[in-house]
Length: 511
Image 1 (tube, rainbow, N blue to C red):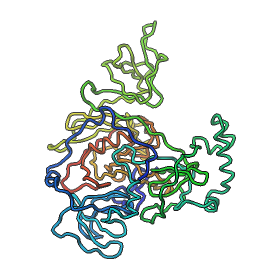
Image 2 (cartoon, helix red, strand yellow):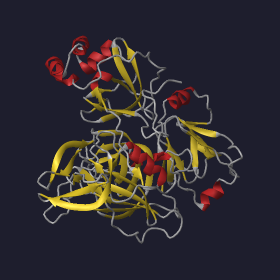
Image 3 (cartoon, helix red, strand yellow):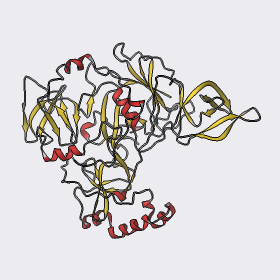
Image 4 (cartoon, one colour):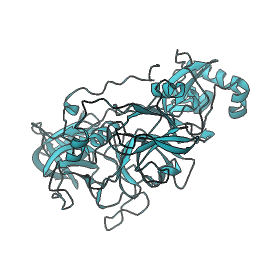
């Protein structure tokens, strides 16, 4: 699937991306363990200078009331944009000798300087008033960019989108016979298994059928600058949501853009627990990650030959390896740290980087780069010659030609690139099917044309080729890599393009 950022205004940032105060719906508890103890130095000398007065409070904040509040290079609507903030976010102002600059009309009354650089226009889409009622509601529901999961997510079964709480008449107009649907849901709740649910309505298999127990939040009719224009979410597309509630006998979800979606018309995605590992202490390369089906342990049998046992290593486990590699029936078996125990290359992602430090990597600073094997299904992050992180990924699902190269369609581009732009969340849309949408994809880093490293919440096939061309990472891995890589994200920015002269992470991709 070729995908693109949903808003036309973001085309220059991610043109077709991967050919490609209420509670949150779920609470986050993800920072446990040593995985996030690693804190690389990320500031450049320029940033250090910008932050030299960090003890002095900013003169105020600008607050976003639209999906895209652009940060322009100059106080001019036609000036190049540097980045943006989004719904419910706030960005510190910057002291500038010019102060506030007059805008061009009601949608852009005045320009204000923001930190660490650039200008934002206040008016229709942004305000300096933190008590603005629209901003306050959006702020309560803004993307949780401290978490690998900025929102919760679900797959659409052809879900309608409502701007306001719908009347029964509204629901009938979009969804047909609502009383009959509610009767089927009630009957399905009593079913003992999927077979019984299928006999009632196969579209309810995998759907959360219960009520939420929550009252509706404070709602308002969102402007076109807040809510996407699609009337419905096409079958197979995804939604991002940040609240759930009950209304007139049905359970509902509040979408990231304030749309209202019936829960019975989606299947919620579980949160993948998989993540990679920091290369430190006793952790060394090469190592392996078990694929989704698990890995049988191989041991030497009574006949003196290696054979599979009934013992399995759980899916997505990290396996430390020994030195021995043998062949059995045309497949490689890797010795594990457990004496006499081997795993098959069919069941694991074997992480063994071989590339030298690319010449494109800076000779100064942290010297960040990543090596990606599309067929091997892994990524390793480096600082200079030192590996710091390894994980399993999912690259383009394209088949392999006889010469070992990928067919062009849905393939991940081979070569050496650099990170050009970073977005904490972004909605992607298919080029071939414009109604096919992946909502608010987390931690996207564009490295070549429309190709990116990004989180994937819609599958957990780490190590297998599954993507439409981008490099898919688990949400936790995408967050780690986003925070670690260069260019650095200015405090409070939701997205940014590469500034001239900034260090940037090199991306090396091979089969």
